[in-house]
Image (cartoon, rainbow, N blue to C red; front, side, top):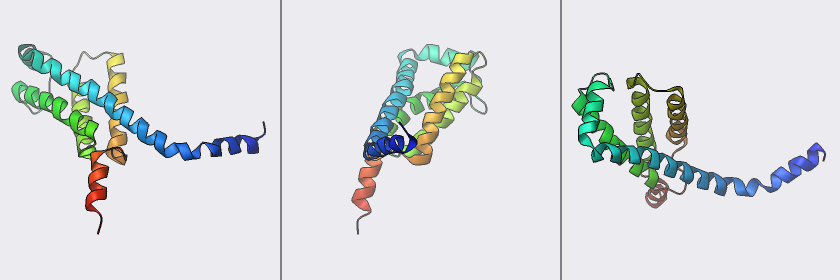
Length: 149
């Protein structure tokens, strides 16, 4: 197959780019929701364990362990839900990006595999900060609804 034929084959797929991009964006939002929301549920399920971890394991800068625990738990429950819905998508992704960064920096015993996971989540979140949650989002619906003259 020559180069021109290959380019022609790829050009036939171009109409699928936008729908696939939107589905992919939604899948990423579901993935991120699941990771962070389940972590938040784990924290509230055993609050005494969460407090012990924040007092003795995690060293969050500038915040008391109690404040850090409450903020992290609230962030892990509220921000992923907003991102899943695509409501305040860039804001919620930015908040989760910061939460993710603080988590990786404040836990001194994190494994190499753990760091790699946090990097992957950080890249996903950076995508949403830069490009928004996509067309399949409440942000897009609200923008279209209120931007009409």
